[in-house]
Image (cartoon, rainbow, N blue to C red; front, side):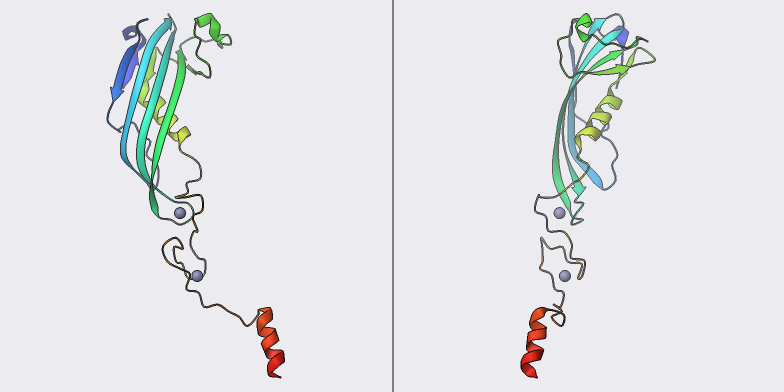
Length: 171
Ligand SMILES: [Zn+2]
Ligand SMILES: [Zn+2]
């Protein structure tokens, strides 16, 4: 979805995107559902305020055990999209009382909503994905997914201190 500045007025316009086409393509990740709500309003001739909220649910591979698990994603953001050349340092100049808003410098007066949503979704997905905090991972010996089945490695006792004791006893 693209919004031209000329279509945006001082009155807040609301868009709801119930589809997930904007969701980023991520390796080993399949999207179950995603919706985005976007509010836009004109701040001044060169600047548009874009507020958004993303809700998503997807399957992703656990970095530790390699199994797919479901993850929810939620993100809210505020952008000031501007075609001004100079840096905007004082947000108050724009009568904008939004804190933590990001400034997006545009070459043309067009808000690429899909691109913003995609970027925000990417930011919201953690770098490390674990199915649970105490995921036990995969045994390096037998390759078992330890959350599902126990390790079946043959325990090698020949080098343990108890093995040494046994030897002494047998002598
Ligand atoms: Zn895991
Ligand atoms: Zn094992």
